Length: 163
Image 1 (cartoon, one colour):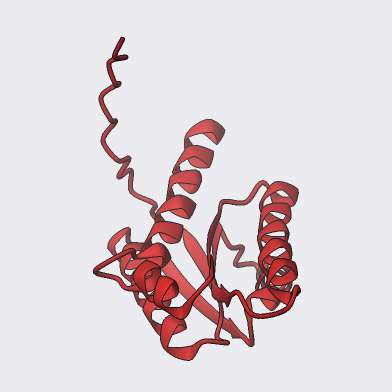
Image 2 (cartoon, helix red, strand yellow):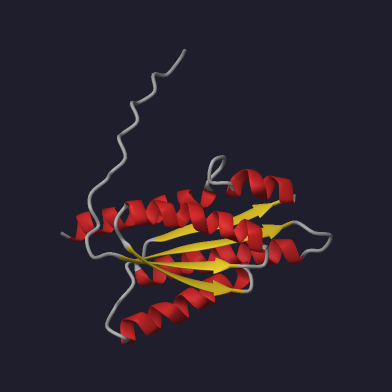
């Protein structure tokens, strides 16, 4: 028996006036980082939000830098409404891959839950550089843009529920 699929809902495009979104990008793989950032920035700018970008050496530093930046923004009277984490972790010959991939994802999830903060996770965890490019390219996988869209979707949900 075939179960009928539900029609897909149209994407919510509610304006996000005055929203501030922080992108924290790990730059260990420079060219891939540039592509992820381009995808994320395009989505966020199309939504009309203010974008700030912070760079860190790699994916493992992304959640810590986001926490530091959130505290500084709050202290400075310009709180951040959402965070997009970007980076690339490519499997190597050691267990280090699992640690960096898992801990960067866990750190971003904890950040979102602890602060009730919309977070988009655009940290790619792949086996090869070829897989990373297939996911990072704006015209192909656009995972940077996808992470930005996820953060915006959560921000719209948060604003709707808090209204």
